[in-house]
Length: 401
Image (cartoon, rainbow, N blue to C red; front, side, top):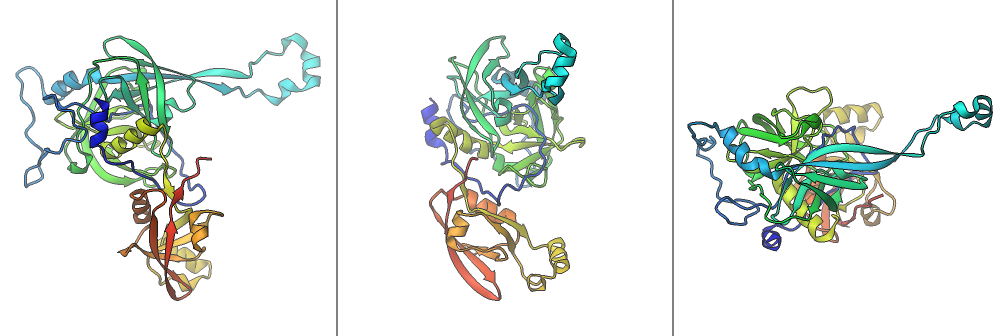
């Protein structure tokens, strides 16, 4: 049945490397969401397209039940498809240098503690079932470097898991367990989210299995740099549903019990702020991971900055007045041997347009590149030393190291 789902998926998406590793400190939890799903009426649809909001942008009426509220109904239906993921990994032990000093060992003899070179580190996260035959979607950081993965189902069964593919840039991974006829979550459409609609998070925060929290959709389209994960190439859903370490990889659901996001990140020391990967984006990446085991992300190979007021003030201080009056995105650095270098882009160039679309900030460039395939060409409209140029750049494969 997975093949039927894959046929309905759009082709994989891609990401842009904005220079030689612009990274912002990250904080992650330990969960994931889902991808392919069966609708409750038996249809195997990945992204349900019949979700309609009223003209006044209000959410559809909540389900009624004499004994259960809508949250209880969602949890009862969806809960069996949410899993706990336990990952074990070997990590090098940090042995104090003095313990290896010959004089120290000679002096203390047998009293020097014997510290092993490696130790086993264990972590817990969340995930959810995306196909009846045992495929599970979670966050990449939940299984990163894992030598052993086990999956606990709500009904008490425990399975050994195999990582089919992992993509650190989008923090998504797919696990396979050997099981059949599993409960599968229904997929919603994250493009249709309405600010203020209900959001339900299910996962295993802090080791507390099957924890449910509720809130609303606080915002959409939050960039990775805004939330402190600048090394990722994603936009995020913001919610005030409580998300804690261990929730990562678990599903964020709407009032109808459809998955709309994958809980993945929080801002350190923040309260009432959680973030999730939109399910539409996650579905594209998961499909590629299942098929190929990895995702090839196109990139240009530049670091850049939007020419906003703060940037212009800095340029003025650096005695570069020729750039103060420009509009667009300033190329700060060009990586050696990158597609940008091969196309002749230079530090100090200002990107004013891409394929005829006017550019005002770096996020626009990133999203355009993400939407293209490796090997395709983009025409950049540049301003260089008072000259207007059009340069074609052939997108390359983002280096993994």
